[in-house]
Image (cartoon, rainbow, N blue to C red; front, top):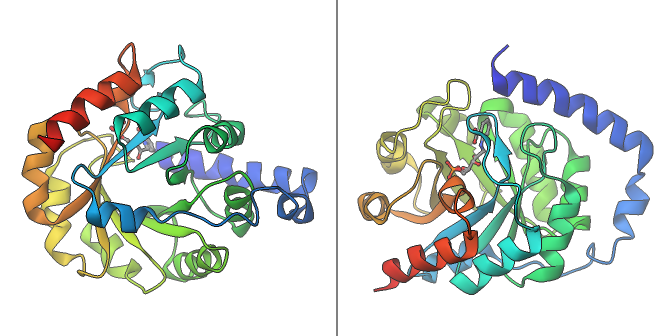
Length: 261
Ligand SMILES: O=C(O)c1ccccc1NCC(=O)[C@H](O)[C@H](O)COP(=O)(O)O
C-alpha cells in the first residue's frame, strides 16, 4: 500500500464512524450551513497574486512542519497578507488538522476557505458546509469519474465550489466535467512524493479554458510563479513554504508583496 492508499483506507473507516456519531440533521443545523459562500474562482480570475495559502501543521512527506501557531494567528496573517483564499487541512492522522481548525478559521477571516480533505463521501461535503468552507477538494487519483460527478454535483447544490486535483493526463481526461470550477495540478506525486513544477507545465495546455487553473505544492519562490503564469495558471497553492517559518502570515506578506510589485 502506498501512502495515498493508506490515507484513503483510514478515511473510509473514519467516515463510517463519524456518520454513526453525528447525524446529517445535526450538520444541517449548523449556523454556517445556510451561509452564502464566497467564490474563490472569481477572486483568482481578477487577482494579481493568486495565492491560496495553506494551514498545514505536518505532512506525510515532511513530518512536522510547525505546531507553534494557533490557527487564528495563521489565517488572519494570511488574510492580512492579501491571500485570495486559505486552504485548511482537516485530516487529523496524517496532517494534524481538524474540522475545528476550519471552524476557527471561518470565525476569523472573510476570504474563501478550502476544506483540504480526502473526500470519499457526500457526508464530508456536508461537514465542509457546516464548518464554514466555501469550496472542497476532490482528488482524481482516488475517485472514479462517476464519483467525481456525483460528489461535485452534490457540492454545487450546497453552493460550494469544487477544486479538482490531478497529477497526470489520465486523471485529467477522466475528470473533465461542467460541475468543476477549478482544476489544480499537484506538483507532488502523492504516491512517491516526487515534486516538480514540470507536472503543472506539461498538463496546462490540456486543461480547457473554462476552468481556472491552479498549481499546487512545491512552490517556494517568486521565480516559480513567474515560470507558471505563462502556462495560464491563476492560482498557486502554497503550504510548507509559509508554515515552516517563524511567522507564516509575515512570510506570506513578503511573498505577496513581491508579486504585486
Ligand atoms: O504534503 C504531503 O506530503 C502530502 C502527502 C500525501 C497526500 C497529500 C499531501 N499534501 C497535500 C497537498 O496537496 C499540499 O499540502 C498542498 O498542495 C501544499 O503543498 P506544499 O506547498 O508543498 O506544502
